[in-house]
Each structure stands twice: as structure tokens, then as C-alpha cells.
Image (cartoon, rainbow, N blue to C red):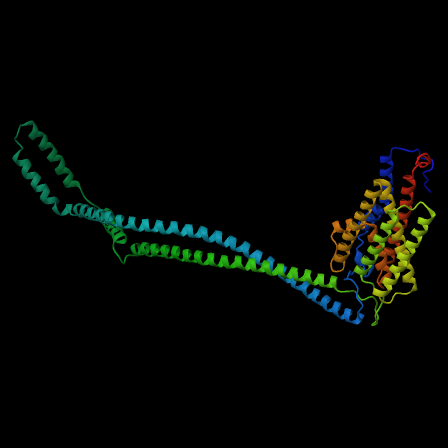
Length: 479
């Protein structure tokens, strides 16, 4: 056991800090253990694996039916949530596919527009080519006719040349001589020029082919001419069709977006429904046993109010002087009176409490009273008379506010981690936890053990703190 008799008097500020640390150590350990173990105030009246709302004095069979109904509703909500998730995933896949389709259709629309423009230009060029091809065919026909008709007039040409040569055979003029030589050469070529059947056939084919090309390019009813016009119209129709399809797709994509938004909203509503059903399950009072009879119950908020009364009464008493035998006797009477009053109140507002539970409640309230008296005395030692009393009352008020709010939340829903940490640092929390655990059939023995352990440790640390801050003999004599 730690003693302070051998400790040399140090600066008062250091001793006050050490005393405060010693007193705070038990609740710090209790808070760390509560957070690490995941302990919830609801465990004092229900199973930690199926936490429920604060208990009330009702027939357990009614609670069983209600919890069974909410359990079935929770299962159905879980199935609904799974279905809505699949719906959201499916719509997401559809959305991804429509994006690909939209891209492909947009690219196709651009391609058909280019095709339509190209075919229109080709159609115009075909008309121009038809005009040029007709002129070429006319020229080829004229040339071929002249070439193939040369043999028919060759004799006439030779006779004409011979007659002219006869007239100028005696001429001595140089130009005439030169002309006579050229005409002689021409007569020889005209005499020897002949066209074989192959050449004639090829010339006829060239004439026929050039005419066929001209007709294909320029005359309606011809395969190429009509094909170009048909292809151009088809490209234009295809472009118009893809344009309409693109417009229709945009409408469809908007519908898909609406479907995606709606499915997401349905999924959110399903999740919210499941969460609300969970809150209803959490808020429903728990059935305290597996029988159809009423069982032991003590509402948590009643326990908070009773513990708060003990806290304030003992704090007011503790902030006065308790050094004399008379004041010590008053403290004992105050503790016993507060404990008995708290036990009677628990019997009045609770249901089915036995002698063992009343004894446990009395022990809890006695410990809370001792802690509150020691806390009040420590505040006076640390801050002085008036300021110490004010600090003690403010500390008590803070405990009631934080613990009351946290336990009010625990009656219907899970406590956030921040609130659980804050309330676990308050001695009032452990007293309330012990009262509720003793007062309910579903109370956890571990909660009772933690509450008693922390509160006993607080009493010991409070006494140690008072011992540390006790004035020295010299100072008492001087005073």
C-alpha cells in the first residue's frame, strides 16, 4: 500500500497536480477499458450481441412478438437492400454500355455525313464527266469514221495526185519541185496504206466503248448513272436515319440517367428503411427472460436521477469541513441516509427487485456518496473554500449533464464514441451502470464488477489525494 508519510513537503502546486492525477487515474483506466472492450450502457439491461432499448415494466410476451416482427422486417429490408444494390449495379452497367453506344453512334453519324457529302460531290462530278465523255465519244466516232472511210476514197485521192503531178512534171521552180516530191511520197503512202481487220475491230471497239462510257455517265436509266444517284440518295437517307437515331438515343440516355437517379434514390431509401428498422429494434425494450411473466426492471433514466440526487447531496456535504468527530458523524449519517433513500426510490420506481439487488444498490450509492464527499473535500483543498465549493458543484452539474444525455441516447440508439468516452470519465456513469445492472434481469455481471472496481478505486485514490494535500503539523500549529 502506498503511503505519503515519508514524502517531503513539496510545492503546493505540484502536490495538487499529483493529487488530481491520482484521483483521475481510476476513471481514466475505466474509460480506456470501456472503449477497448466496446462496452455500451445498453449492456446493463440487454445482451451485448443484441442490444435493445431501455427496459419497461411490460409483459415479456408482448416484447417478444414486437421484436420478432421487427426482426422479420429487418430481414425483409436486408433482402430489399440487396435487390436495390443489384438494381443500381445493373443500371450502372447499362449506363456504361450506353456510353459506348453513344460514342459509336456519334462516330457513325460523322462518317455517314462525310459519305453523304462525298456522294453528293461524286454525283455532281459524274454529271460533269458525262458531258466531257460525250464530247470525247463524238470526237472518237468522227476520227474512227474518217480512218475507216479512208480506203473508200483512196483511189480518188491517188487519181487526184497523179493528175496534179502530171501538170507539174515539167516545172523547174524549186518550190514546185519540192511539192512534186512531197506529193510523190504522199501518193506512195496512200497507195500502200491499209487497215487490217484487227485494227478495224479495235477502232470500232474504241468508238463503241467511248460512246458506252458517255452514256453510262450522262444518260438516266444507265446502270452507272442511276447507281450513283441511288447511292447518293442512300447515303443521304442513312445520314438522316442516323441523325434521328442519335436524337432518339439522347432521349433514351436521358431516360437511363433518370433510371440511374431513381434506382440510387430507391437504394438510399431501402438503406434508410433498414437503418430505421434497426433503430426501432434498438429502441424496443428488451425481454428480460424467456418466460411469459413480468421480470426485474429499473429504467436507466430513473437510475440516473437517483444517482444524481446522491451525487449532489454528498457533494454539498463534502465541500464543508469534515475534520472534527462531529462532522465525521454527520458525513456518516449523510451517506447512510442517501444510500437508504436511493434504495427506497429504486424499490418504488423499479419492479421485481429482491434483497440481493437492494443490497447491491445500497453498496453502489454508498460508494458514490463517499466519492462525491471526497471530491468536494479535494476541491476545497485545491481551490480554497468558496471557489472549491463552486468547483465541486460545477463538476457535479457537468457529470449529470454528460451522463444524463449519454444514457438518454443509450435508451434508444447506440452511443457515439465521443459521448461514450466523455461519460466513461465520469464517476456518476459507473454508479448509474451499477444501479441499472443490479435493477434489471439482463444486467451484465461484468458491468457490476467494473462499476464496483472503479468506484472502490476512486474512494482509495480520493483518500490518498486528501492525505497528500493534508496540511503539515507546523502549519496546523501556526493556524
